[in-house]
Length: 506
Image 1 (cartoon, rainbow, N blue to C red):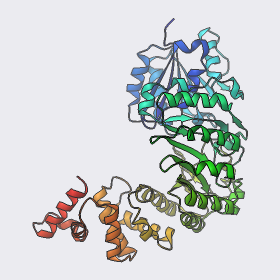
Image 2 (image 1 turned 60 degrees about the horizontal axis):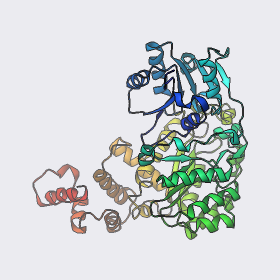
Image 3 (image 1 turned 135 degrees about the vertical axis):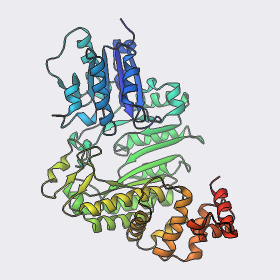
Image 4 (image 1 turned 120 degrees about the vertical axis):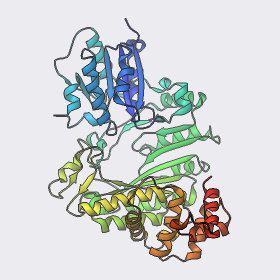
């Protein structure tokens, strides 16, 4: 029997991502593990080249994990696999095909679809297929499983993974909350892995050299005893290279958790904090439970009493919220001063309950991935495009961390209005939301801040120079004053400008 009768595969967004789901499948293949191999690819690779690599092993079964970011490439890949080797059995699963799969081309081409958590169901299907017992039903609903029944996946991170990839881990699965934009709303249970077994696995990873742990738990701070045990574990192993990422709910930081968070040094702890909206009516409409006052208090405490890097999320386009309402929440969050604000456009993931609002609020989504909102009854398409650009420029300027001195001048006392003005002007001036060089972006910010936002010229120059000290201040001033169209003229100002640019961006 071939050692690679079964292949597990997926297309990751980037090379440094490592699929935790595939490693769960591999860990739970039991007696079939020695006949199973795992192959990961990226979006940069052509589906035909991926097909070549997979079929070179002449597998009997290929399991492919499908997500929102790889559905198009996965569809092309499976079409090629079935055209070249129709006898190879293709089994698909993953969030993108576990709900509303009817009529999807990728499902029609595949031999089997496993909906839901396939940790154990995939191995069971493979056993049947290898024995020649083909299930009558193409679509298999995975039964709910107990976490104690699972073999943990962490030994299947290779030394190469540890050296080059982000290592994803989970202390729990599920979420008890019912936020309608999230797939977790479909399963309101929250299950925790045995904490001793989990920490033993974390110690093994740590001993192998892992220092960057990204927790996928939806609500890390839900079970405080478990959260404290995890933090204690890492506090005992602090070193200069340790980095931890957790997703937390914003209104639940009891003293026991605060005491531990406060002990982590700068650069060690990142907290992703889902605010999404500060509007109580919108929160109620989408079944989101959140104490806004306590959320604000927790964010203030984190900023003032911890070294944690705060990454807070807001969503544009929630039903019942217009641009003015989003602007109010944005300004409120800016005042709380998180290190990053992730501005996201609402997406209608397959199966999520937010679809119940489609008719009443005229929610119209992109029919293609990532299924982002195009317009609704409160925000028309043109305005939504402006907000899309706002989010893109915010990521480029504010979240890049490059403009820490300049951002307070840009935002001043009306953050959303100012940055919206700047965003509209940037697009009108450049016609681009990406591939803007750093040198050009600095020039644009100088022009936009002084001419559009009426920030004092000297203040603007000093702030931008403090952000970029790669040239002396006199040369920087000359570079900002020179017109880009005159950069090629052989005069002293143009020469100094070119020299300053060369020094700024060697």
